[in-house]
Amino acid sequence: MFRILLIVLLVVVLCIGAAIGYFNAQPIHFDYLAGQIELPLIALVVVDFLLAVLLTLLVCSTRILSLKSEARRLKRQLANTEAELKNLRELSLKDG
Image (cartoon, rainbow, N blue to C red):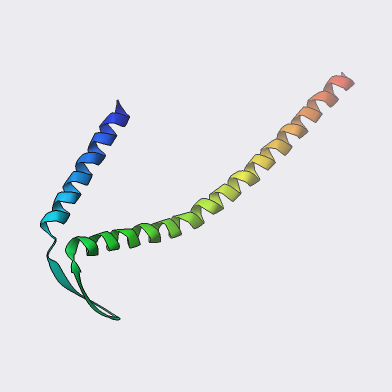
């Protein structure tokens, strides 16, 4: 049920975005540091969105990689601790 609701919401948002793009197709004059360009407003919005997504992925990927590395280290530590605990239990059974 949740997945269907999410898909419907996504389709609604995409339709609204397409309508906004269609009704804002007139070109605008955009000045930036290296020059100027004339392009449709929706193109500027899409490019801005894509740049924000790429920057976010770049920033988050470093954090994700460090967390994966820490998770691997902790799994190795857990395996070593479990092996040591197993050895101690076997040792105590042999002595008793």
